Image (cartoon, rainbow, N blue to C red; front, side, top):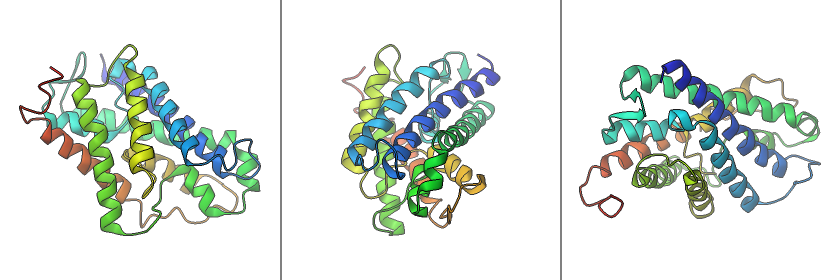
Length: 248
C-alpha cells in the first residue's frame, strides 16, 4: 500500500471521526439545536459512533485515526502499521500528517453544518468546546495524568485486540471509547488523541467564527503530550510477556 493511500485513508477516517464527534458536541452545546442540553452521555455515545464510522472508513490503513495509537504501535515494535505498510520514519510521519489534516477538515465541516447555531450561541466557551477539550478543574499535573491514563487504556486495549480489528471489530473499539468517556472523561473531556484536539483547535483559531473568543493555547499542549505519553507507556507495557498471553 502506497504512503499516498495511507495518508488519504487516515484523512478520510479521521475526518469522519471529528465531523461526527465534534458534531455531537455542537448538537449538545450550541443554542437552538435539536439536541441542545442532551448531556454528557449523549456526547460519549456520539464519539463512540464516530470512532466506529472512522475505523471502517480508514480500514485499509489500519485505521489509527490517532497519533497516540500510531506511537503505541511504534514503541511496541510492530513490523507493520497495516498490511504492506512497514513501520519506519516516512510511514510514521504519513500517519501523523493524515490524522492531523483529517481532524482539521472534520472540524471545519462541523462548523459549516452548524454555522447558524454558532452565530446564535452567546458563550465563547461553548463554541470552543465543540472543537477542543478543556478541564473541569484546571490543574496542569492532574489534567496531564488524566489524559495519560485514558489514552493508556485506549492503546493498551487496542494492542490486546492485536491491532485495530476488522469485520465487526470496530464496534469493540467504539464501545471502548464510550467506556473511557463515561469512566474517565469527566475531568478533561477525554481527548485521548492529539490530532482530535489539535486539528480542531487550529480550525477554531483560523475560522471566522462569530464571537469565538480564545482558543486556549495555554492548555493545548496537555491533550497532545498526555495522549502521546499514554500511548508510549501502553506500547512499552505491551512488551511484557505475561500481558497478552490470553489473547494470543
